Each structure stands twice: as C-alpha cells, then as structure tokens.
Image (cartoon, rainbow, N blue to C red; front, side, top):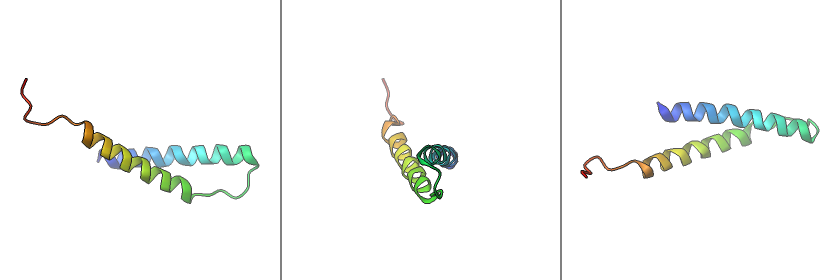
Length: 61
C-alpha cells in the first residue's frame, strides 16, 4: 500500500513539474509519458531504498 501511495504522489508531482516546465519553454504539446516513466522509476528506487535501509528483524543489542 505504501508503494501505491508513493507512486500516486510521484505521478502527481511529476505531472505538475512537467506542466510548469512545459509552460516555461513555450507551451507546446504536453508530454504525459515521460512523467509516468519518471514516477515509476522513482517508486522503484524508493522501494529498493526502503528494503536496503530496513534493519534486520533478529538483531539484538
């Protein structure tokens, strides 16, 4: 579930950044595929990062 929420927010924020940058350049046709790809890559990166930094369950100190 947390990865789905991460994907939703990544997609929303990437689309907003895409819109703003497209408007600054001159406002040609809006590309919706690149932000989707970036959101998927960001979600995969955060899932891997979360798995790497998770401490082991049986570590006793």
